[in-house]
Length: 385
Image 1 (cartoon, rainbow, N blue to C red):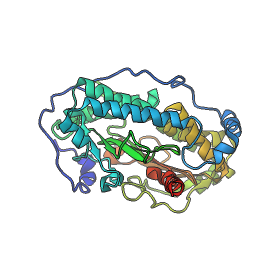
Image 2 (image 1 turned 120 degrees about the vertical axis):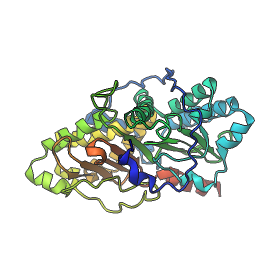
Image 3 (image 1 turned 30 degrees about the vertical axis):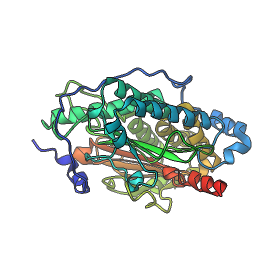
Image 4 (image 1 turned 180 degrees about the horizontal axis):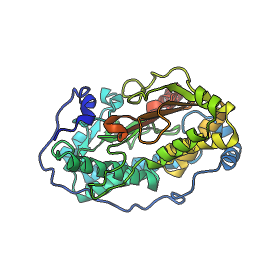
């Protein structure tokens, strides 16, 4: 049985290089020691605005250069160093590319060969060290989300009888530059329906976008043992609740298309495609509706550990919540193809559920100024000269 849902994804696959051998592995789940407060509830809007006030002058800094972030950068350097130390020399050579490698900006979410070291190539200790790296970036929910994406790859392979191609071990970690030095460095963990790109500018901050999360099937069908599992169900519930609360005029302003867009717009190599805001400005929404949009943003930023999540939300509120725009395309009825976007000066979130009978989600979060840590790099090079 062929899996048609991803056909157009393969059209972009110029790299090929699928490694089919040894796919009888199992994905290991690890329980990670989390930073304190990792299970913290999302901030209420009042608490959010209070926390921004408390940050005071520091909130005006670009990027994620808040007081707590140097500790995150140090944690990352240490965890990535430990992972590299756990690898064999041959794997270590594959794991690290030069800082100026063109692959640094070459992210994608299709099944393809990738630079770095795959889960398939790692033994138990190396795999544990990899999850320790992810725990320096992600909250407990973020770690579970990545575990869920990898689990869905196996589910998809079983549903389509295609475990050769749907390989839950074809997820790779790659490092750019030297984590132990004072110069900027980066890392990415990526595979089908998952890409997290992180850039560390020592002394300046940590860039955490683009971040892509996909789910196919978005809701696992009843014939599978994981029936009913909805990886991105919280995001879907939050946006349908918001759309349901918009009255005629506001809903009309929010709608940018009668049909869903069919995919995210700001995909790989198109991070800057969306220049103008579309939809309804949050300045026109009431407090409950505004809180609904902020809740959606918190679901995306909340995949990060608390220090990074609160810095990301502070960056958005500091730029002005009223300036954010919410846009919708497609049907307001669940189960039909739909698309939404939240877009402002410091954030862009897109979510599309069109393919496979509207049971296949692509979502991305990009910081328009700070994708791949661009804003932090400018600062770094300015200070270095």
